[in-house]
Length: 111
Image (cartoon, rainbow, N blue to C red):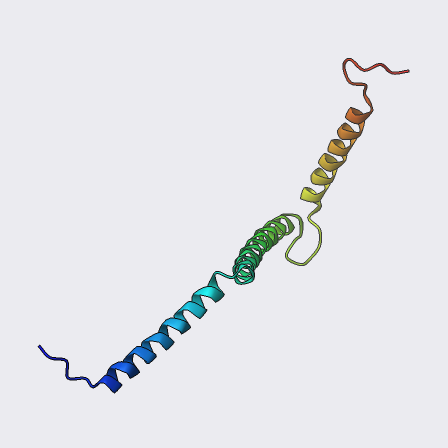
């Protein structure tokens, strides 16, 4: 089996291969450079945060819409049969929290 290429063709192939290897090494050096790695991590992190924030916004929006539909009639007026009990419950919870924070804890002395 003889090689039909001339020495000039072989030399050209070697030069071409060296250039390809040099380009590959340059690309690898760029990929593993700490700045490139940090940029990639930063971009992926920001994407994940954006996605999580979007999901949180959608969930909060659904919750607010659901509560609003329970407390406001279709014409925009408040549904007093539902608003009043909710308001009373909120006042009771705030009152209990205020009362609980004023009581002395066990083992503490009040002077």
